Image (cartoon, rainbow, N blue to C red; front, side, top):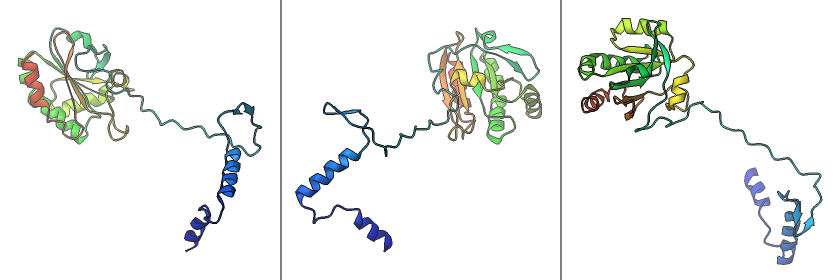
Length: 216
């Protein structure tokens, strides 16, 4: 009941005459801080009660630019270490199709499922002349253990600091808290022909990706 009474007090009174209402409105206008220092050609004095505007806080950036590498584009080259500590450059694979997929982390359920699906179809990719490359922020030792445990026959690259992920503009998931899962298919000239993104169905695109490779 106390709140209702307070709200009623804030409403304009119906007993005020039009002239009194106009006067009050004029006073209210003069009391408002203005974004301009002039009013109809007259410089208004600075109010001692004016409060400086509070600057808006910018949302924290994830450091990831979405959509930087798109279909039909040639992605930037990179050089990273593989699971054996050897240096590998993307340009090394030019002349053959490449399936390159970014994944969040080794040994997580979705990433393990995705890696094993690529493993099970790896011979078909190889027959089509394609290379499969997985990239995450894990170090070479983690990749080596991951590949050994699940018998992964393809290259895993260590993107520590997620530099390549940021350069490619791989979108993050779950409001920027989780590195995204995104797959790219590059043709023999290094041009992106297909992009797939699905955090929660990591193995769904394996068959479709293979069909695209076979038709390149």
